[in-house]
Image (spheres, rainbow, N blue to C red):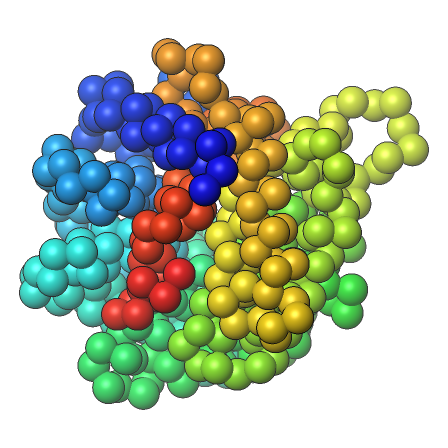
Length: 384
């Protein structure tokens, strides 16, 4: 094993141990001057800090990580009593909390919580458009009933798992319908990805394709590519439908083609480059971390002559992150990775630490250290 992989693991465990004190029972999203903010348990990123803790617990067997992860899950529990308090990111939130706990501890309460979350997600399915509604009408006037975003692909794993766990085909049928819709409306022929699509919620008809968190409706938001790579790889894992694997590979190839040789990816692969205006020139380390985890999973299923490419690509992404973004020399910085870009169009959290970047970096580094930790894969999670 390469020394840098061992060093990266040690770095993760040292930083996470310190963050038990520095972050504790809060729900971080982005750093400000190196310190993580404190979001509501209702925010979509609530599961990532517990997910990091479950990763480290699984690697070290030290109860301090398990205990805090469980406490954080319990603080989120009230959300499952009211469907108006959660959106499609139920998948993100409970895959990395209750489902991770069930997979590691076999706790039946955690299993039941995960199934409750899956049922709440299933209730968001729009049968006319074959999609899962992304958001609620949070402010009373915004009609979000027809909005779908590429991030949704990562929420399908909870449904696939629920179908396997219960034998109820409804979860699988709805998740596959959503994946097929994403293939049709989000994935371009060159492997780039739309971030947001709007449908008529009554008829299911396409209304428009939007830029969302990307530079424009025709651009290539790098984190969105990461969501598609990993999301479709997960879909293939559960269904073995070749179109899902080929789509994951196509987007990964697009990502690899546009990655700069000596750095981490731009936040959008199609920002204007013929300008001296540096306002566009932000990187997104989280995009690399997500794409790396997806590419690792692709490498398990790709044709034999292509397996090595995706494995090496994932390793290269993670090594670049360790060399160019890891906060190794910054003991007071809560984040594992710097240089994340959360939402450039709204100028939110630019060149900062992002908890989901930290999570996927952790998952990827542990996987390359031979520690099986892919909570997205349900009962067969150790296939990584």
